[in-house]
Length: 277
Image 1 (tube, one colour):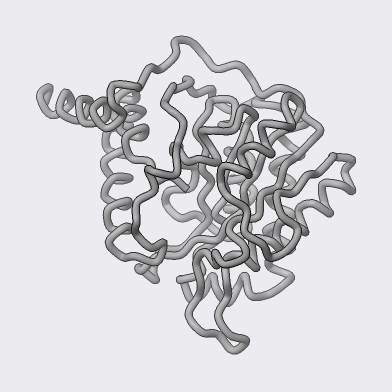
Image 2 (tube, rainbow, N blue to C red):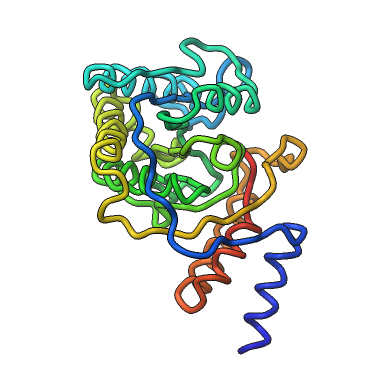
């Protein structure tokens, strides 16, 4: 058994090129913020994921992400937040430019990237929320809890993963996958404007709760250092690919098994299993 744990540990370190250095001690709580960067995923020539044909045609992730982000923005502005958006229309914005926008905001801001998921396995459903930095854990947790009450859980829910929009920003940042467009039930759900309004309300509620309470009542996680996520790391596999989902599901299962017995090794495995976005 000891040899097995050591093999998993080495896999994680090798995958990161020996760059995994977890900090010691509890993470500091999130800093107070009044500015929120909303990042609608994809746009322009990049459609993102899509549903199977419905009565009104296929649902495109880029359209739903923008619609949801606009709704979140309206809700947050009504609560007194300053809201910045990386795009307000159907245009493509490079991932590194989205990160630059976040970093220009500086202290007092958080970033929330909004997406809808897709996979070759049509049975997979539910919301997922990604984070990397320890100071983003509370925000991700609160958004995920609220979103799952609307959409339902995926069995994965909160995921620590090194993505360009979770690792690279210097402000707390999370990426939200609101629902699976490739799941027939969820596609029909999010096709309804009322459902997208409830999703937007859930995201906004999570942000407001974090601004009000910080990380109070949420267990701290250690910081994990890793190099910046870069475009050259993106795997040339479609978001719709069954093979990609199969691989990610098996990696996630390995993480969950490790986490129950060896928390530190779980973090090593998590750091090694990213898919840059």
